[in-house]
Length: 158
Ligand SMILES: CC(C)(COP(=O)(O)OP(=O)(O)OC[C@H]1O[C@@H](n2cnc3c(N)ncnc32)[C@H](O)[C@@H]1OP(=O)(O)O)[C@@H](O)C(=O)NCCC(=O)NCCS
Image 1: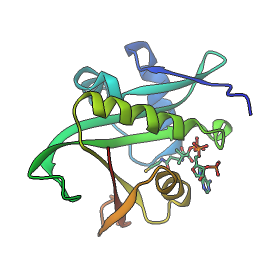
Image 2: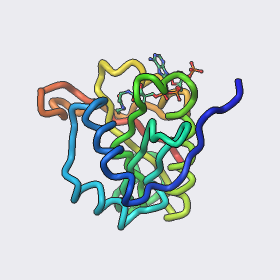
Image 3: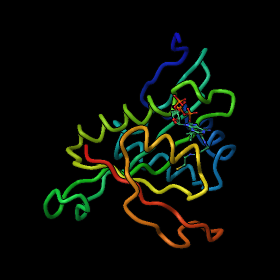
Image 4: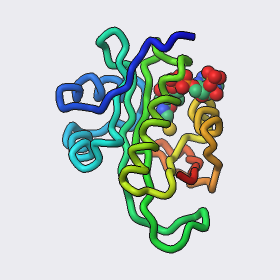
């Protein structure tokens, strides 16, 4: 199938569109300061997908330092997917897969050795997406979300 979207780095003008997609698609919402802070610190891993000039999805990540749970040695850099969403009308066209793949490239640019994320245990779409990309469930985080739902911590070596 012909790809109808393109990826590019987030820019400050995109803030309202990205916040709107975030509010529409996820219960975890953030302040404009939070989005801009991650953009300023990690611009290589804050990406948007555009179709016909309209933003239809985004991914926003953070680079952290911590212990590897994949046996990669002591303290390492890890890429943490903070938020990813695609508008309902843009789904199942490979947008999220492309965003994840490009963000993981950005994480490698920051010398991250592994990538991790949290996903609701009931989020079939998310879990399938991450498994397709080679992520594995490392553990369950009980009551991770504010409504009490558990999360899977999913991890992949970069
Ligand atoms: C999860 C989400 C980001 C996926 O976006 P998307 O652009 O539709 O995903 P893709 O088209 O790249 O899908 C890639 C693969 O993921 C899996 N997948 C995606 N959506 C799926 C679904 N609804 N059911 C089952 N598997 C799904 C499939 O394996 C798919 O490959 P395929 O289409 O060849 O079968 C999107 O559904 C979304 O925004 N959901 C709401 C927000 C959210 O849950 N974010 C993640 C929080 S951790």
